[in-house]
Length: 401
Figure: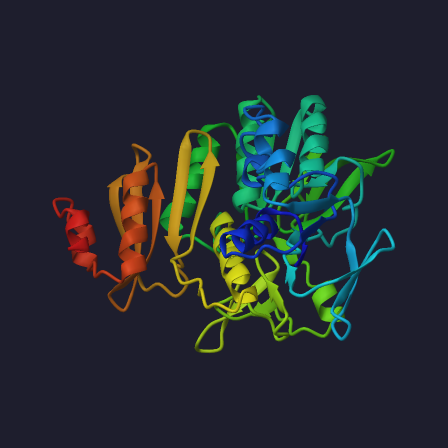
């Protein structure tokens, strides 16, 4: 079995193949020069100096060797020959496969404005990115973050805690607009402003200015100019589908897979950030999370063994900013009613999303218990009515019975 991509999902496929009883050779190919590592801490604990690189590594070499998983780092797969069932590697090798896994991940979306290639402008996606950003952050005084999503805001929190002058430029009229309701956006705007961060909404970046090849300021379409020694761009990701496209696999917003991670080729599965799952109604669902990487990896391994293991659990995500943990479960898109439960001012509350009276998602702020309960409610299809969520005396756990 050949696995292209040595990230969280690729490693999960390899380990799940062993759990499924596969005893043949497994080759895990990664283009980064390091073993599989945890990515979420890059914009949080690692960048803040609260975790070292050894803690990022998911499996030590001895653990991989024990499971007889061969991991080749610093090498990429440059082409897939589906007819010959082989892959061509950047080091000149050709490797035949009985089953192929595409866990190629994603890359940061580039900023399409003049000056985006200046020194001092970074995207935060890989361990190497974070190493370079950490060094630049030490010397920086003024920091501009382009994009008010998870990555940008997590970085802003780290920089603000280090005493930097931080400005967040968000093109939309609120933070995290794609994934949360206005009350949550407003809460996070206040949270960052309370920590000294300037949050500028409706700010369309027009270009980056530089001196001697290094960024010095960010200009917006309305004529404003923000000084910057360091710029972080967090405007989304692009799934790495080029290899799959060149091989003739169906790709649309990602490598298209079914609920069991199967592509349009019966010998090839795909998992993680690079995929777009085809739902029963025909729509495509893209998920960018550790849970998706892990669960889809398990489904992919089962599919290679000829078994059905659909990924059906409610998706969940999290974000750490300052002393606030946001835990999300479900997908809130299309909600028509929002219920807030708890104390917003105390930074301990939850937001329940409903569509046509049915619970579809929960955002829990510093309420881990509500998050775990929400996962059970959504996974098992239990009913929770808006009026029940709204009633502070109603015991949420009773909805499970």
